[in-house]
Length: 324
Ligand code: COA
Image 1 (tube, rainbow, N blue to C red):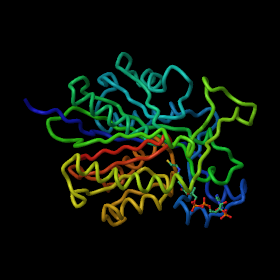
Image 2: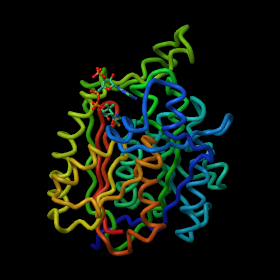
Image 3: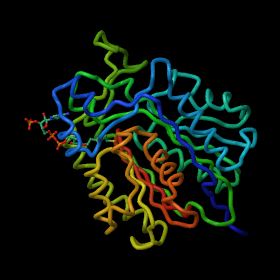
Image 4: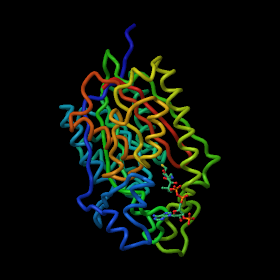
């Protein structure tokens, strides 16, 4: 029996029009462009307009991915969407996007794995295709993370942005995705979280208490260590070596974390896709945005081997090694 693999046949992304630069942030909090660039590599971020939602960005990114793949929305048989900032509590943003695309009838659901949301969604979609359950899947990572940013807290407000990316994943006789690895450790919940919600309740604080709480230094340390072992595990799962990878497409949270992973892989930075300077941390949107950027700018070519990885609240961490 021949194996079924999943292959990315198209990519797309979407960003809000409004750009907030580090200089703009200097007017909001006690910070400097120099501090932000040195500590994070971020120069600017995109911020959704009033009324512009995660679903709006996700729909646009998905339409662009479908167009690039030459696939009709009505041929999609599954939509998996990674997000921590859904438009509404339910229906899922995947359902809202499905209807807007005209893909009604297929399975559609959201995955909340914080910044690893897209990587989780990709891992799940790969399994649906490998099992023969699905043939053409839309995998989306989309966020309006700035909706839960406290613009008076300098430790966090400089780090995040809004955006979405999507891929069309199709069944193929050739790889495709060689391996995906998904992990979580809920024991680290207090280092990066947003404590309010329907079941736990909202508070009387500004924005009903909805705001990112983060112990930046601790998150940084765990992220670097965890990503080190994740890349080892992924290479082993795919039966590959560092030198087999053409491009590292990492989660775009902090340039120093990205550089540490590249060093672990013995990769020079010119083989690493970096968009954190332009987009900041867009959580689930980050990896597919970077992938689409790399494809459309001509960096990533068909047949090349890509290592995608992400780390985020939970903690969660996940990866995929694939032939593009
Ligand atoms: N502008 C100016 N100074 C700031 C600042 C800002 N925006 N934010 C914090 N500082 C100050 C701190 O108050 C501290 O001052 P002190 O030394 O007087 O106490 C100093 O800068 C150093 O803070 P520290 O937190 O140690 O800096 P850092 O080098 O760890 O960088 C982060 C901070 C948040 C950029 C870094 O820890 C990080 O990126 N962590 C990971 C975050 C992340 O990726 N989260 C999402 C995961 S998906």
